[in-house]
Amino acid sequence: MSFRPGDRVRVARRPHDRHHRTPAYVKGKTGTVERMHGSFTNPETRAYGADGLPAACLYLVGFAQGELWDGYRGSAADRLYVDVFEHWLEKA
Image (tube, rainbow, N blue to C red):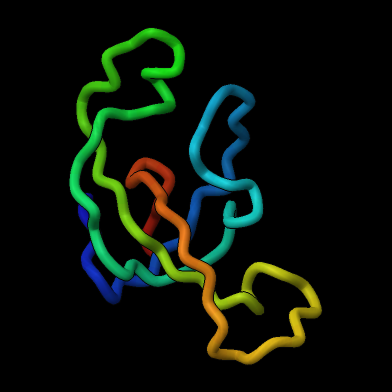
């Protein structure tokens, strides 16, 4: 599955007790794909000596601050951007 800029995505809320690059505060949250950076070896498997293949797509995902933080009092336009590998994303 590949995503495109403008697609609404949700970050999977699955447990992961080893090294991973997805911040806990975005798990289960919905955002919008802003761009695809390209395909890269998977750092989650490379951290344990594997080759990181197959390569995985890395996306820049924008989240409304109010979606991330309970009681956020800033502007509704405030966004936080996080790089997220495709295997953490699902269609919203």
